[in-house]
View 1: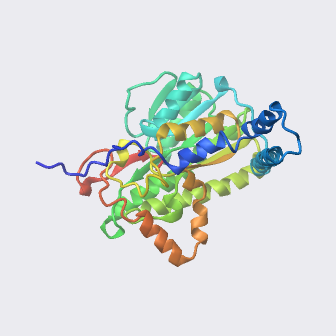
View 2: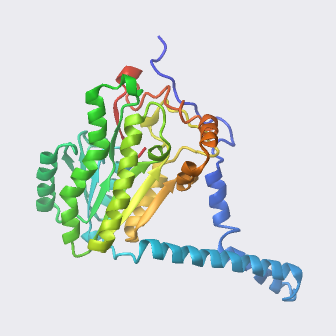
Length: 362
């Protein structure tokens, strides 16, 4: 009997891992890095080349331009995000919603092993049963009463929360005409309203903390571009991106000791995305959860405000909206964004009529 779903394509060629992200990463650590750029004129000088020789002048001009670009980037980040806060992991109490599996669990395990105190909130049991330094609380983040109860338990058991990572989400993956009203309500409640509930529940504790705090919001590029079969999800992700940016503006004025991190992710490499067709492996590669986790952890560790976009196109996705509408239509067709969900089955591997599945960070 044939399987009830299509198995996602496997990487079967040597060049499959090659992507624009990999190329940019290589260039950033070589030709576009100030240290490497200045090695070239130093090597020329070691060969007794005169300072006014054309190769020397070109290499110095290139190194100077790269250095000035890095300095301008640092100034831009300082103007946009301000000074970082001091972070001591032994004093941090990290609350992660949707942390029983996937990206949330990965971040929880890393911080647990590094000595931070971690509380995971999820309706599902943790995939590995337990993890060092991680305390699991069964909680439906769409239930305000459950959140209030769990928040009190966390303060009693672990201490005052200092980091909130809003990571829980749900994908149903149906056309709007096929969605039932309960499914729409569940999707909007989980993906959008729960963010208001968790912020209202835990943010007062973060503002009381003597070490400051950090709020992390996991959003999606789908919130900007939208996609067929994701009307409810796209609307909610657009909402939480707007929520995050407005909240960040408020906190800069009222509680400048609170840092905010917005994560705008593309498709993650996880069983939860079985059946989703990647639009373009070179321009829009599948993101490994460990790479997203590294960026999120680095932002929290450094105590800085940040906007993280992965893969590369996610950092420029807002420019899509300024393209002429005709060109937008061409880009959508070429990218295949509106056909990517046709064979979506999610983690369960069930039939398409039973596709509701909890996911993290799409």
